[in-house]
Length: 265
Image 1 (cartoon, rainbow, N blue to C red):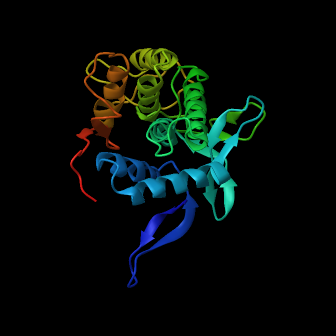
Image 2: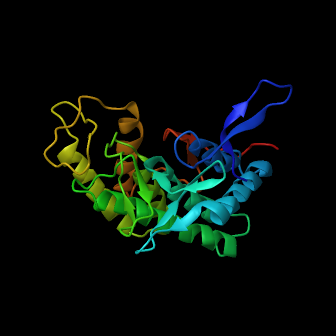
């Protein structure tokens, strides 16, 4: 159920190529859309749900690991058959995706599979929050590497480009579980962004999340407004009309799409 992120289309039949498996950069959306195509189609195209469940089983069997000494849950990558204990900020979307998958599991939320996935979702959300909370600015780096005696180190990825995946997960978990801790974590992240990334006219990247004296760069990704700020706003809005269980599916760029209730197989 796990896929390398390249597809080769030079032969009669397209096939996967390469040997890098990741839930981070270049591999993330394929897994996300397995679940969300099934949801948006009114849960009628079961092939996509089955693909999702098979991939999530593979995730738990091969890539979901725990750090030393504090047991933080993280998603490793696999390259040439060997584990690479690197987790991208991008992979933090999986906390929300796993929770959404658990709450819509055909076996029911109380099933062993759904409870496993919800537990993993909450654990990944905590890890991604720690990636923010442990930095000197309260902002997470682009990726971390697990494996030392202090859970993880930042390595060469000190920068932050206003990514949304952690607050996406916090929004989904807050909506589904009602636990106010996710709103609190999101508020902390928002305050750090306001303090360290805000410029006179917009927001900018940080080149090093552990350097409090640095000014933000004069560059802002479009996804910051489309995703990061949108999820932060929705996280603090208990009266939103957005209904992620019955009416709406967010695509990977945070655009809410209507669930197609009248869809046919």
